[in-house]
Image (cartoon, rainbow, N blue to C red; front, side):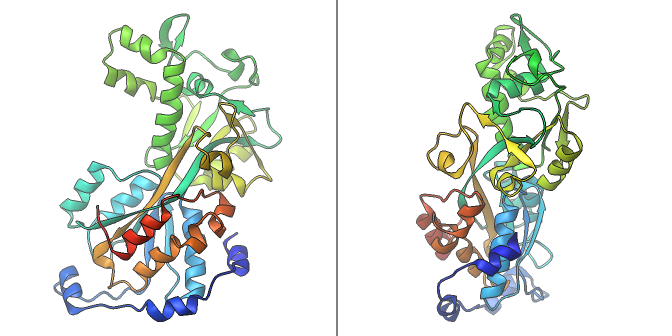
Length: 359
């Protein structure tokens, strides 16, 4: 996918940009990073969100082909894992950028501060949707409500007015319009930013819609405890946490015809030959419904830059500027062809990178 994109990508005259984007590094910067050594690494290193991964990989390959800098190295691992690596410290043995499908947390910032990573530039690249997909020739999983996902996967649900351990074994047990097949779902592991959005915008919403949350509170739970109970998922092989990237989820779906998986929209759109997607709340997931704000399970995507590495790691700032340029991340840019919904405030993001504005 990336190679095909890079071959067909039509860019403006980047040679003009390259002539004005020259790397500068002063002795003071080197000294601030290390009192004993000068950075030897000459390529940008990125890790984190599997949702942001395909976008970052596309941009990295094009950057390497169109700029006088090495192609950045892009790794996955999940948003939380990427931010943990990002916050390990400053220096060539640490990554320069963390991709994330969630905002940075106070706990992330505390870890960064503890390890000397104090100046962080937040870059919002656009928006993405979370989709529920299944084998293209499998059961007719074509329409879900948040309540369906909660009733299928929640550890405790509301049945006949009482909160009980989830008794449902098939989808049709609680919704006759769904297939009469055993419940099996492959969901993002807890280190993925997608998991947080899944919990807040699907499980929590379903818990509220079914009345389960109110029943928990009426039964004596505090609101905080009820919220925790709402996002707890059942085990016993019915829900399976996927700690790898979406390719692992895809492989599980391929070998389990009755399973559903949680994916980012971009990944699904590049695998429509083997997957079909379900509507959520009667709305089909696509760039138009996400841009219009009508698809209920969408979220912003980010990457975070270690400012201390700018001017030291060759091409770091240039890569970030290229990533969010109108030609790449704008509404008519190539990333939109892969499911990214352009940020209407992209110009503000561009300016923040130019000015190296930190959190």
